[in-house]
Length: 144
Image (tube, rainbow, N blue to C red; front, side, top):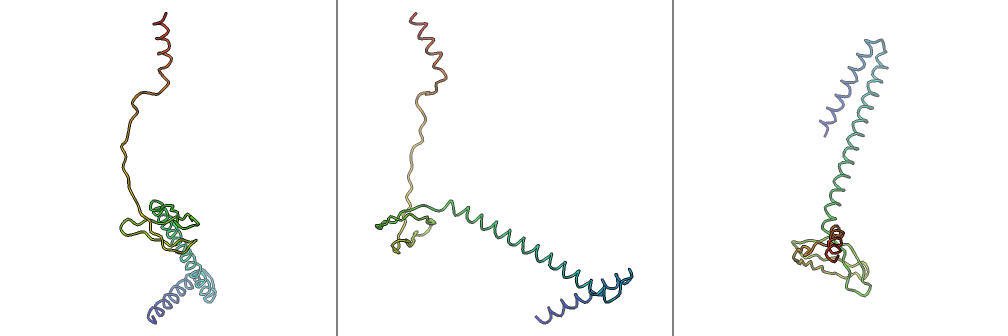
């Protein structure tokens, strides 16, 4: 801890000295150059920290949105069997029993997930109205 502080302070003084020498060659006083060096380092540090925090916050929000998106596929709206029939959205777990506490009656409620299969059917006859005009004309021609 003390070693890290020593390294940081050394870097601060070295960079400040370099900036002060550069500014002195441009005609600025050493003390003003050192103060400008500290201010420049402080500004660069704040920009870096602000950018890092902003990046971290945006990344965390992106992960939170992805988490919410994934949870939206794994939830169900259920009704408590108590007298109040309270509806709640509960995350489903398929590898273990899903149990939640009802907000109205404060009892533990278990959710049973059932799956069901059905056959996919196709229409037997064409029910579109596109061929009706030709059918009517052919019937009229047959009767005439």
